[in-house]
Amino acid sequence: MKILGVETSCDETSAAVIDGNQVLANVISSQEIHNQFGGVVPELASRAHIRLIIPIVEKALEQADLTLDGIDGFAVTYGPGLVGALLVGLNFVKGLALATDKPFVGVNHMEGHIYGNILSQEQIQFPIVFLIVSGGHTQLVLMEDHLKYRIIGQTRDDAVGEAFDKGAKLLGLGYPGGPLIDRLAREGDDSYYRFPRAMLKDNPFDFSYSGLKTALLVFLQKLSEKEKEEHLKDICASYQKAAVEPLIIKTINAAKEFGARQVAIAGGVAANSLLRTWLKQACDENGFAFYLPEFAYCTDNAAMIARAGLEYLRRGQKSPLTLNAYPALKLAGKIGATQ
Image (cartoon, rainbow, N blue to C red; front, side):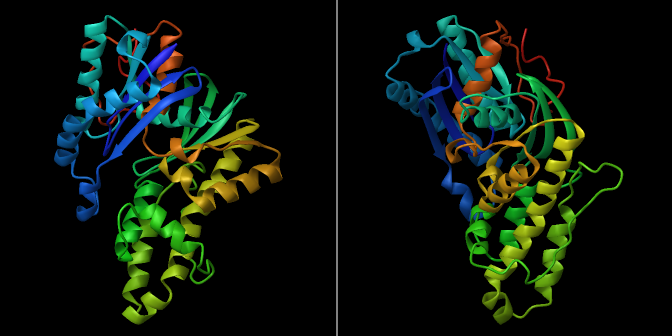
């Protein structure tokens, strides 16, 4: 099946065409206007999606050398995300489905990130423990089969991606903060300062990052501007280490606890070099297969949405035209997505 996917959950407007696991086109337009604000402005994001969605979809079809007649079905993100941004993509795809009399399916954005990793694999085995890490989510998910998920751990407060973004802001860096901290940390001493790691006794697979951000703020208040400048790379390395270590420990422990021999990462923070390196080493040491996504499918993109949608559509499942956007959609317990 050839699937046209659309992703507009935040500040990337993306359209992709896939044929099975083969990506024929994956067009992404990132909205640079948000950089000056140090974060995404929802209203500006929605307006940009409205301007961009038609040319982006047209470009994806052109790159795939197809017209809408050659598309078998559509997939679109319907949550979680910014409600205005989600509605742009969802309503556009509803229009395409109605005009072409072809099925469409709403896809959970986090489910899309999972299938972004699967897109990179020639073959997979279940069950898989997925570590989903992004600006808005930090979750451990047991994937028992295609489209079957069980959340076994999640953040109690802030996501790890947000911790990177806020940490970068405190350090006077730009946005998004994760790639900037990652780059500087490669040349720093990660033993310069020990930031706290949250280990929660009542659920060993849950995460917390609000304390880490506060610890960085308090630490920086004690330093002079000269000390901050001289040790910027060391601070980045120490901060990144504190953010990544709990992810490694809890992911490996979860795989052992639930009898999974496969471990995978997904989401924007899956591009972090320290996380990728350390988690692979930990998997090798413990005899786990490690599924690592290509960089192109870590951040928000429509190819991952199309791949998840393919699993529904090939089973004959589709969404009704009454499907709404759900900004706080959970991975487990989908709300009326398919029928």
